[in-house]
Image (cartoon, rainbow, N blue to C red):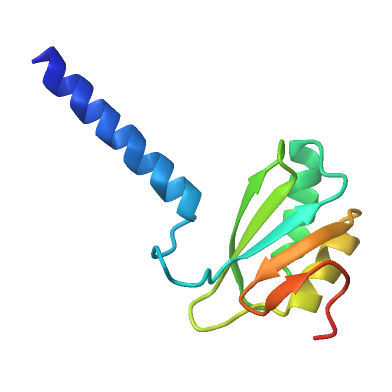
Length: 114
């Protein structure tokens, strides 16, 4: 019985890890979300401030944060993609600087034109 429970716990842990790494996307498909690498985000307060500005951008549905890695994943609403420039400027309004923005519209290391 103990072996069975251990196996179940292991499978659940692996499934959670795989889902967190894919951020809810189908394997092999291009990501619908945008990953933003930030310069200064160092605490939950910074993350909340920046996320608040990102939620103001049209098309943003959900945001995931990894403060330690200074990363934010911006998930779009169904059928809508937020503007890369809008996301970049929202981070700036949140008092940080994007170092990189990667998403369906491309990979940007400076402010996008659209």
